[in-house]
Image (cartoon, rainbow, N blue to C red; front, top):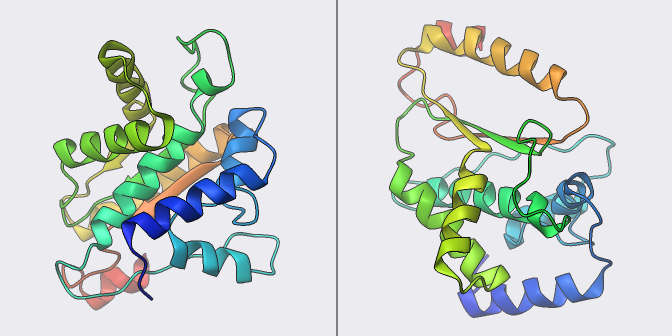
Length: 200
């Protein structure tokens, strides 16, 4: 499955023109996972979501050799999610008061491959490409607000995963009204032994 950057850009713009604009951050979060509305902007993920017939979203696993862009795909998904669901798109008040009342992203990073400069770059790129924010002060504010809604969790050992997952589950339960995107980079990679895998 190959798609050029330009092809992706054209397809994303066509999709965004086809459907009604979301009216709230929650509506935008739901549109993000609905390829027939706006979708994620990542073609192969949108195809999987489009084929999903269930009432729940599927778990999607990206496999590949080291250096094939799996982590960058996760960073792009996180960036597109927080930028498309930010309050400033839906309110005249650009300083959204309640960060807790916004769709969020949890990224589990047991392999410690997600670096802050890359995450900042991904969010900044999406804002510049998709929203054409030219004012550098406003751009920096939007990047900061978006980054506050991305939580990167880095377990040190495999034994830390179960308590971390339970903590995330409790946080998600408290935040029922707003969809949360959960991403896991290096899912059950070779740093885990068989006992840890079965426990998770």
